[in-house]
Image (cartoon, rainbow, N blue to C red):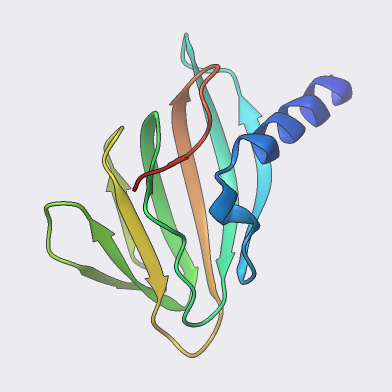
Length: 127
């Protein structure tokens, strides 16, 4: 069981886009559950330093999140910019390109849950 969890975390970290390695962005995997069929549900704490953007990307499944600390602008392609702060939540449908930028003067900390197709990277950069 522990070996499977460790393997899942390693796969998750390797599946993150290159922008996840940039300074000022940190993703900490919490757990991965193979559910529902053909999908994995992945919980992550993401932290973003002031002024840092995550990078334009999308996911092969739904993203749902909750702002624990800080504030940021969420830029979803084709929609007006949303300003979110501690206590706000969001959802983004599968495949929709988006980016976010910490617009506050303190670190941003969010809890994110992804329900993504098994075997696909958690996130992919979008030009």
